Amino acid sequence: MSKQVQDAYIVAALRTPVGRSRGMFRNTRPDDLLAHCIRGVVAQCPGLDPTEIEDVIAGCALPESEQGLDVARNAALLAGLPVDVPGFVLNRFCSSGVQAVALAADRIRLGEADAIIAGGTESMSMVPMPGGRLSVNPKVFTVPGIRGLAFGMGITAEKVAERWNISRADQDAFGVESNRRAIEAIKKGEFKEEILPYTIEEHVLSKDGQALEVRTRVVDTDEGPRPSTLESVGKLKTVFDSKGSVTAGNSSQTSDGAGAVMLMSERMVNKLGLKPKARFVSFAVTGCPPEIMGIGPIKAIPTALKRAGLKLEDMDWIELNEAFAAQSLAIIRELGLDISKVNPLGGAIALGHPLGATGAVRTATLVSALQRHNLKYGMVSMCMASGMGAAGIFERV
Image (cartoon, rainbow, N blue to C red; front, side, top):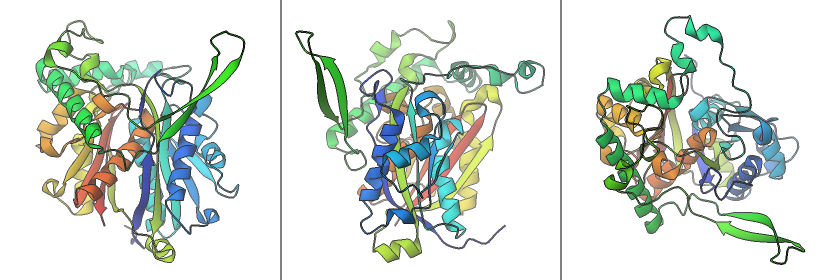
């Protein structure tokens, strides 16, 4: 194992509010959302010469159409960064955003860079799942153990619910609680520090239909959370299996949003006189059977903890992406996670899941929460399509 040269620190982490698919960001391009966040984290680093930013790494789960053509590079230029600053987009499905943070941290820790912006963006309004042209290799039906690659993620959630004995009632209760926590967090202003308000421009016809008007409005609040009760979600029909238990009320929302994180070496932090918010500690990605892809964190979390030399009890805050209540509950129960530490402000069932942006969005939430509540260690973790899990650990400094 190569020797670690230096630590990587997060000095700024911001995100847009997350919009529902076909909601407030339905006509807003994902590269504009990412560019907005890039400008935001740069502005929080006074004295930084933009030419010293050595890369922009952005996650995107469906890098095509409006979010194609290397959306990281495009967003960097749209944000006004010098043409000398490169950028590249990566795709590890739902963990793309936190994978971008991990790659940036690794380059800094190896001494290859002093300042990198990492993040993610996704517009599920403009590029709905599964993208433009899905083509599953027919061999997945003949190769043992990988048939699940052809399953929709909802079917994999049904299989997790069946194997881990997660009832419909427990899934519904989990979804209701996610919304309750998110609504309460918004009321208390818990997300204010991490959200960078965005000005939406809309072109509409005048009332007489004779002129085109430009209207603007500033959005600064997540659009997804909605009041729900066990009674209301209990009336929802199952989506993927008529005899199953997965519904719209206990699944993550399709969403639009972006996030960006500025990472720096200690040398750069000291040079600029900045106070870092967190230290990147460790990261792990592991695989699992594709047909139960949601349980990926069951292996990834212990691996990340081992690499960090920490125990589960050391984690003060866990952002566990709620792809589905079924898989979240399976992970919580299997690992014995403290439910009070898991998504204290609500999760993706309430707040949304803009795929490749989620890892960066949840990193911003975690870093802000560790600072605000004076906590030491936190984790961002999620499952991924095709059967993987990821976990990143951060320490408040």
